[in-house]
Structure formats: structure tokens, C-alpha cells
Amino acid sequence: MKKNLWLFAFVLVLILLPLWWARGSEFGGTDDQAERAIQTLAPHYRPWFESIFTPPGGEVETLLFSLQAALGAGVIGYVIGLYKGRSERKNGHDSRV
Image 1 (tube, one colour):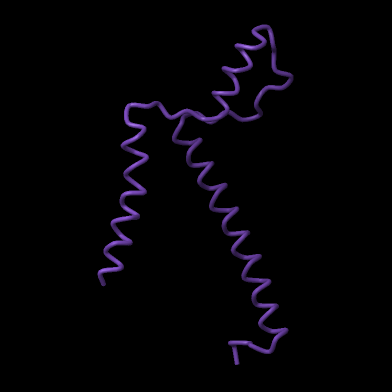
Image 2 (tube, one colour):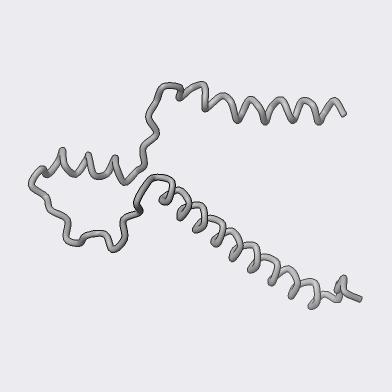
């Protein structure tokens, strides 16, 4: 029980420390940083293409990113489960017996 309490405290510190460290900072994406760097290095640069779809707000962009991450995690989990199941059937350790 004491080990779990120490583990919980450690995880809590890992969560809160970065939030405390970055207080007052503005969180921006790498796309914004890249755009600023390009404008600094080559102010006359014009992009070759325009975006096909621009989300109406930050919340929609966050939602789409979250859905993309969830879909990717689902695909990775499915593939891992598929290969684990094949491996267990091949070795004769089928748990469905």
C-alpha cells in the first residue's frame, strides 16, 4: 500500500511540475513556429499551396487532432492484438478453448 502511495505521489509530481514550470507561457504549435521562422528567413516567400480545409476554431482543430490520435491508437492496438493472437494460436496457447 505504501509503495502505491509513493508511486501516486511521483506521478502527481510528473504531471504538476511541467505545468508549474511553464506557467504564464503561451502554448503554440510547431506550425506557428515554422511559419515565423520562414517569415524571418525569407520574408518574400509565398506558399505553393493553400489549405484544403481550415477548421473554424481551435476547439475543432483539437477535436480533429484527438480523433486522429484515437484512430491511430486503435489501429496500433488492433495490429498488436492480431499478432499476439496469431502467436498464441501458433504456439498452442489458445485461451478460447
